[in-house]
Image (cartoon, rainbow, N blue to C red; front, side):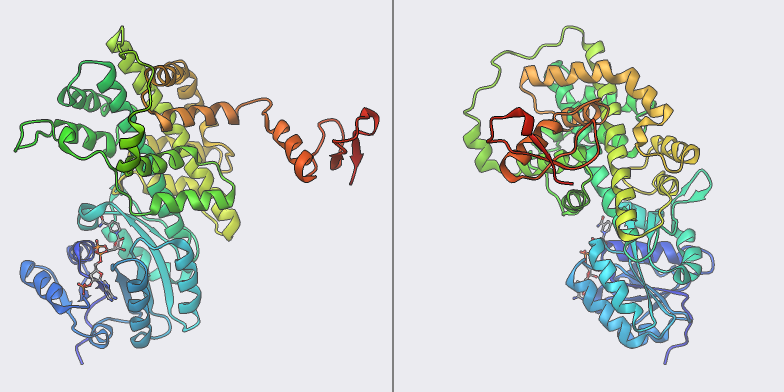
Length: 482
Ligand SMILES: NC(=O)c1ccc[n+]([C@@H]2O[C@H](COP(=O)([O-])OP(=O)(O)OC[C@H]3O[C@@H](n4cnc5c(N)ncnc54)[C@H](OP(=O)(O)O)[C@@H]3O)[C@@H](O)[C@H]2O)c1
């Protein structure tokens, strides 16, 4: 039996797992047990990184024996059935009090189910969202763990040692119980979809409204990255636009097929929001925009449909570009406001206590949506922890007030020019909807009552009412069915 010399283990040594194992091994005091279903990946990791303090295992039993108690293992395998298979194998060799962490991209209802099942064995199960891709896993990701308070005692210091650091604080917090961590990671990814789509729309409008080349637009994004839009996604956008295809000499962005892929977390965010009744329209439009792009057969047929028939020319390029920047910032505020609404609604539905300010802080570094902007969200929740609408916080309200004329001009320009800007325009509609004094929902209620006797409430008295629509006598129009 091997000596129990490791304080943490990693199961699954593909790109994410091996980088996470290397990150763990690089931190003072960690010795890392490693296991992969097929032993070749374990051998490769050992031979490529002889400097790391790894304890390799070729069976689950050996892996368990090499871990100090309480045993703590992070699973980094394909989400879905492979994760269930690994959990089952670990449960067989672990003991009560040990901790199994799923660091993969699990769907949060699966995490709730797994936590419940594993808890019955006395073993702790923690679903932890890990963001930052392969580089983040190696150098410091943003980590969103759920699970029990008991597991956080052991796990907290280990995760803090490998997480990204933002302004001196590790980007990890105990998000909440059972599936809370994976829920928050899911919404993170949804916001990421919205952020990326908004940036893509900004690029498209500038490209089609001005004579600028991708390389010139890259400079605009690089400039934006020095201001309030400063973020990883803006930074990499400039890099992508600067890239020239070695084979053709063209901008690489012009050579890439315009069909965006998705691994499903955007769709989960939207599906969950629909069930919770939270309008995350920016995230939904971003997700649908990827779907629309990925139907070449429909796009080919629909290409015969007419557009406005005019060439899109911008009179004042500098003013237009500034309008687009303002529209991007305003729409981004909406996307985050909607995302945080979904987290709040999820916490209420699943009985999690989630500190929204803490979530914005752990997204400041390590993850894909990392940005200066998140400090402003943290400030807003520090000021008013139960803020009902994030974008009404003074800083954001001021930015929206300042940007709204530009935002409206950009949406009008896009519509007139026939340029799709679904995330820009739906964000603006959301903004106008949520701030509206009165919505046409009253008419919808009337229609619902007409065909389905769904009843309605009145503005002038309590109760629930139904109108006898087919009776042509106004005096008996309403009936109190209360
Ligand atoms: N890639 C990213 O940027 C990223 C970012 C955040 C989160 N994640 C999540 O992190 C996890 C790992 O991602 P990845 O890209 O490194 O790997 P992956 O391609 O998703 O999965 C490959 C790993 O899963 C193992 N595996 C597959 N089926 C298995 C089974 N039935 N039993 C045991 N092991 C099994 C493979 O073992 P074998 O070598 O034996 O086949 C291999 O170690 C995933 O959940 C992913 O969604 C990825």
